[in-house]
Image 1 (cartoon, one colour):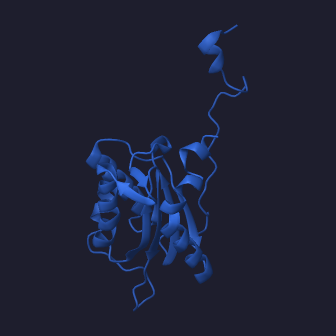
Image 2 (cartoon, helix red, strand yellow):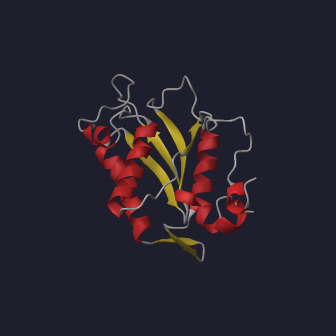
Image 3 (cartoon, one colour):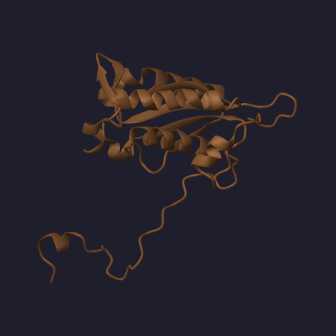
Length: 191
């Protein structure tokens, strides 16, 4: 019979020999490179408060937070089909509205001549998908700091109408003022 620490790490089901498979969180048939507005949330690794702190309802970025901010802003510079409409870097997470824009002539996403950047960072991903764009922000920020800054995945919500867009925009804009009640606040999500 295992004792002490050994007993704490035994599998819940002794017949289970493999780790449980993760459930996909993306829509199967949706093209995540299609022109649309997306609400994105990215959490820090372990939800640690590593990007700065909230002081009197304002986010004050530290050096890590400033690097992440630079990479968010660089996203628009290297991709002319991307617009970051609003973002908020919080102590342990980031919210943003990212829009993939259309080429007015064809209704297709705008083609960026230098899409090699994403292919270098994530060669298996299609370069204009939300996943590859978020992957690039996370990867380059982490490489620049030498620290794994982010959790493995991210949360995305496809914004389908103006009312939803306005509500999400307001939520992101006011996030620093409501930090003490935020579901990502360490005293709330750990309870």
